[in-house]
Length: 115
Length: 114
Image 1 (cartoon, one colour):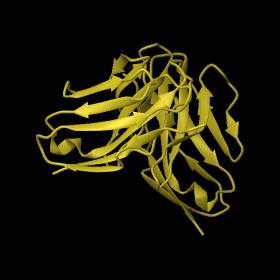
Image 2 (cartoon, each protein chain N blue to C red; image 1 turned 90 degrees about the vertical axis):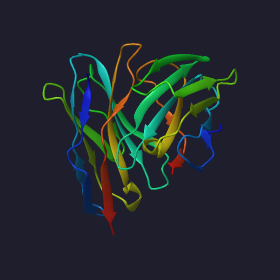
Image 3 (cartoon, chains in turn orange, cyan; image 1 turned 60 degrees about the vertical axis):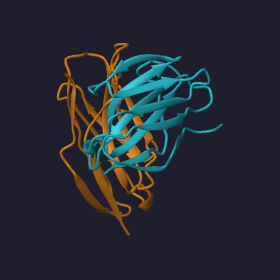
């Protein structure tokens, strides 16, 4: 069974700094999707970034980028020039490509951006 | 374009009661997934509906059931409520079943079971 582990329950950084959130996963599949979701204090979850495992290039969305290490089964999220609005819970998630596969979330990292 | 909406926002029930939660999917989406998010945890998949048929179920007992309607809105029903059912219930809609399809989440329903 697939698992997703986020080893940092909580982190705090100063505004404008760069922060990296860690995520490891376990799977026997060779192709899959990985996601980072953001859940701000108002609760509505939004997709931050998505990585397809068969693509070697790391995904990037503006200030958000990932470091995808397939062999190590590691998928970290880097937030550059952090902003107060980045304060949220961040969830790493895995999804296989089989029709019956459903998304599996980690337990999350609570990120505080300090003024 | 209307996003995913859920009702009610909050709900308080007592043990043994039944509850129905509602979700309206985003315009153009035919797939709805339901998740349970306990305090301090990540969301856990309950089940998914695709074009009114259940398409996969997580590790939840049969007292968790659902429906999807022709307009692709959905209901989650929980019978014989237990204290551990207290959680935030999220629904998410997507435009299909492809693994990479982005899921759009609603704001959730906070259920408290006393």
